[in-house]
Figure (cartoon, rainbow, N blue to C red):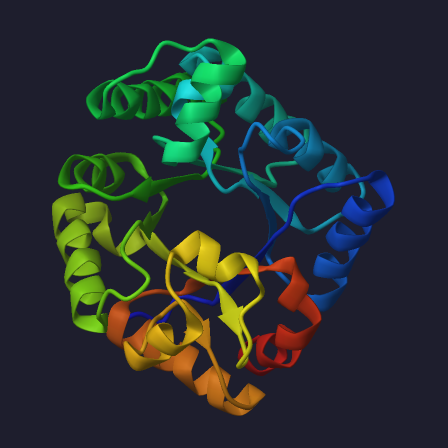
Length: 272
């Protein structure tokens, strides 16, 4: 279905300078494409953290996974994104979405933000992208949209460079393939240019403690449903499975937690 080059990103939360720069430099040395940081109010802000990571590396891309649109005025989010893109030599990717429920709750409690409707939050996503495009001028900061519902998928098809399908961790391959094909069709002439991103939550047989809490399911259930959120087997088996996903689902970009960076490195080498 696609012969686009594979891209692999590690996701990490900064805790201190040594840890953060260590993760960035390790990701670059191992050959990962990007380092991504979440946008939650209980962790360091992703924009300055990513700026520091970009300054400590030379080829590694950095990006938000994903910025929550209600946390910043669209012009402010676009300004920060354009600045990071400009000063990193074009190595910044803006990942943006409407925000996970716990992020929205924290925004109300900690920032005093007035609760907004899904439609209003999606409008903020669109406005942020439009503001970024205006600031970029002839440059182009890549934008990823986390797309869940039909309206978000339509917006992503119209304006995103990359899309991650916000689906259930036990969604079937057929369901994901249909969503990807549908967004490519909606995108029209630019459909083949869009890259699709799939998160991998577990590499190997054992899920870290945070995975069941995040996904609200257990490893046994993920295995039973042939979840795309897990990847098991030898490096060769994992590599072949990712080749299969690229061919049958049209997905060529994958994210994984930085705790798996070294464990996954042999697979990355096989697919380089």
